[in-house]
Image (cartoon, rainbow, N blue to C red; front, side, top):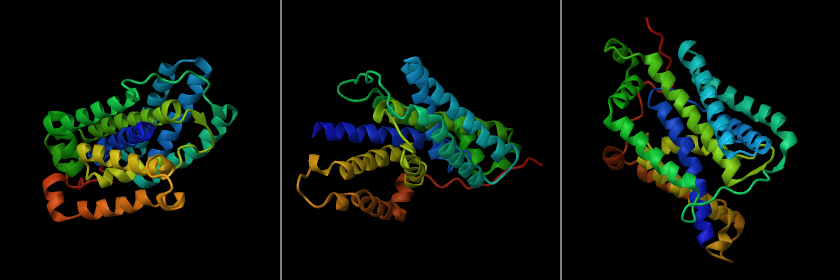
Length: 291
């Protein structure tokens, strides 16, 4: 049973870190549907670097760096050129899907390094994820930077008139967001599942993207959603650890999605949104060109 909960928290951590990266960018008005692609780059290049150098530190550093670079690239297309943010994000995902397959193929198989030590039986990245959620919540709700970010995401024209640089603020958010996505991918490839194979993320980036909308752009609700979906994901993979002999494995595979529908229905009520949720950024996905 302990193994089940540990694996659930490990999965939750990856959803949380990647989701925080996307949430940070979306609060400034930039939508990046290419979370999966950024994570694939972070996971694959981090895996290759760690295997070639024998250093986890370098592996994570490369994962974070490539994530930041891709976030900045998405910002260039979306902010400077004013292009369609969905098209740019899908381009990053397609690029990641194809290029990581080519780059990672010679490294197919296990990482071949000693596993990262746990802290009190849990992955150290679980604690990192909790700290990151608290930091981003504090920044967005209690600092002047957070106020600028939220202003840019709501009404960039008014923010610009008030002396806030929309482009600089958005570049900061998408770059930092990309770094978190790359980091999440590296955590997946170096700690959660250190065995490289073709498209080994299996849609985790899209789940993280959905969790941002699920959370109503609130980092604390995102934390709760990540814990829920991480647990449901692990239950669908290993139901015998919790309820041996109860229902078919294929029925359990449906449980996470059924629970998600129920929770979404509850969270869509006006009472819940008013008390706990944050409003959708008004300028989300809309390009802003300074006149």
